[in-house]
Length: 167
Image 1 (tube, rainbow, N blue to C red):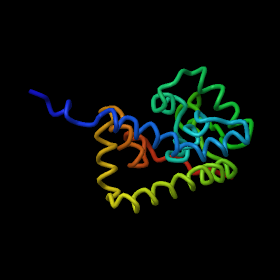
Image 2 (image 1 turned 90 degrees about the horizontal axis):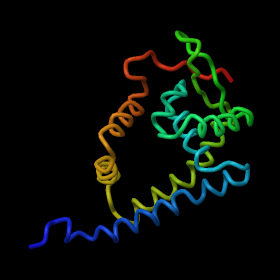
Image 3 (image 1 turned 60 degrees about the vertical axis):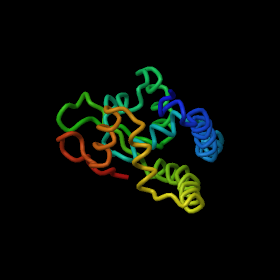
Image 4 (image 1 turned 180 degrees about the vertical axis):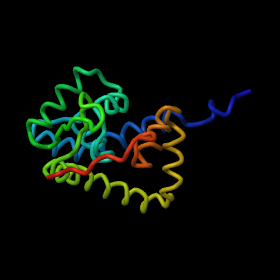
């Protein structure tokens, strides 16, 4: 007797996810490569844009990378004028992160081809965005589900809303 998972075309879906991700990230990779950045820079820009005032500690938790890896990427983004760091309003040792105008322009240029690709895929497949979102949400861990809900709420687990950027 076969189980339900044995009858599913898991290897084919895995392959499709690999190809979809490769193509989804290809345009941003090209844009970032032109300025000497990579995918780690893209992830930092994405999350700082999604949650202005995100602390370095929160970003480390979201990205699941080492402090050393983040320090290198963050230094490049700060030195390049894409991200600014500000001391926390309560704990001055905390560093809150905000995109500068240049950073917001860059993240828009990275998202534009990805948004086009998503819209085209939804139209071509006939799938509803909500169905795809439910599927992807079901694939992530409970911890990631919590992180997504915090990002979508726009706040910080009961903390005050982030301060707006001053540029």
